[in-house]
Length: 129
Image 1: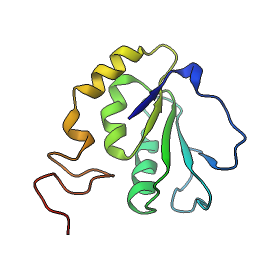
Image 2 (image 1 turned 120 degrees about the vertical axis):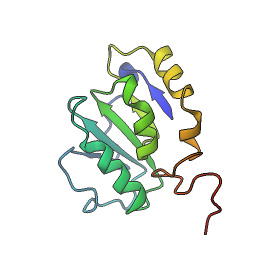
Image 3 (image 1 turned 30 degrees about the vertical axis):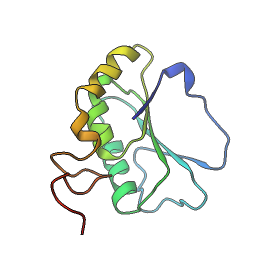
């Protein structure tokens, strides 16, 4: 998962980026020509963006970047990766070094080692059908 400090995430007018409100239905989103979807966490206790990312990956088979924005804390990163996020923009007070250590602590999640996730449906010991 790519990590960005808060200062590196800039608003863009690029037509290939879709900013999806956290109460929007990702199953209804128009994804033609979209290369990145920004999903927003208005506060860390609001987990609707996890479900949106999962639906974009599994049901919509979206292959572009899914970026987490808003109130993104380091302790959410492993679950974000398993839900289908590619990139997270850390909240301004979050330490990048700690975030990288957190992600390194869960190397099996990134490749679907023990359980399937939004990107890797089968664990490594199950052959794909």
